[in-house]
Picture (cartoon, each protein chain N blue to C red):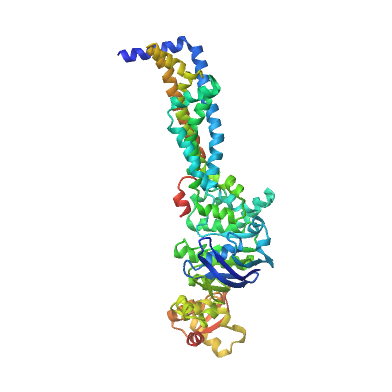
Length: 328
Length: 224
């Protein structure tokens, strides 16, 4: 969907922002650009919607060199969320969200429907928020409006520059979780910039790690944790690699489904988790192994059931997590 | 006591010459309105150009500044040999004088629009013109309007000097009054002008509050 082909960007004052960058973003995936500040990750992103133009090399959008696409047309097809959100304070929430559809000349009824749908998607009730002004909202709500606005014209590509950077840790984690759910639903191609490796690991299907102006490693989160290709990446990923890895794997990836469990194990887990018919400790299929580990430590039980819709669908053993832990 | 008596005399003069008063007041208001409209028409686009083409900014601002530093009387005196006597000449002089507050506020208003907001707008595919029309100008409007308000109040005062080149207005009574030591006549011309300035100021303040009332206040919070 997006392809960087040996792209170099040198600014007018001859600072080199990025040098010879090549990578590809597959359709429907989230690629996170991560690195210390000043490493060129934001510049890289701005090359996609031509807020910057490459000095050498080319950026391809859906197979076409972006230089051959009109700037306005290209930008209207690409959703854009920036860290400071940049909401238009003189317009209502509804008008903000409607910006690109209006520029594209949709008719009013269609725009109104779209605005309401997006506000609902972002968990902002349209009746309550549509006619409010941005200054009446909290930071988290403004960021939701920012995302809704970027998604308004149903873009094929969404660029997000530290979208959750200015939020407090709790709001940020909530929005990240919600956004992952939304992404699963809308399946847009996303290019996401952050300076936080934890956010990158959480949000990305693929991660691009930048050192100053250079692409150091382009890989899946798991490979970056397991096979960092340089000292820089190892340092950047930081401590607790095992815990970070555990947080990437979900319970349902390694659990044994209930229907193939042998009788003995089945009994074991039942005695472990039922207490007067009430399930005490259990896991959800979407939980990470990190939170599973925490539940194991808390409950001091050898194996836990995985419960979905009040039905046990699988079982996980503590030793299996330890194996991954030791294997890392 | 005698001051109060002079005031009453001034009131009497006004009532006795009420028809003439209305004519002068109308002339005065028209002088202000026409020169202000002209000043707005010129100063706002000039401010936009100044912000857009940064190199022109200092020259544009210095033209405005020079216009403001020439004493009002001198502007009036300069307009007379070039444009002759009468209304047009007076309007041109007042126009020159009204430019600067609108110009500086247009520039300040446009420049205070948050860079991120502009980048967001450009990133969403607005053309330069659309960014200006839909984002920058609406966001700068309260500040521009404050400039217009200052300019109007100044012009109401300056318009008294229009009398010297036959431009009419309330200056006719004030300046004849000074020449004839006719204090009631001076007051009958001066007080309505002061009231006019105060009234226009409050009206503009009200409008300013209305257009600034939605979303323009806590910029710092809104962008934080």
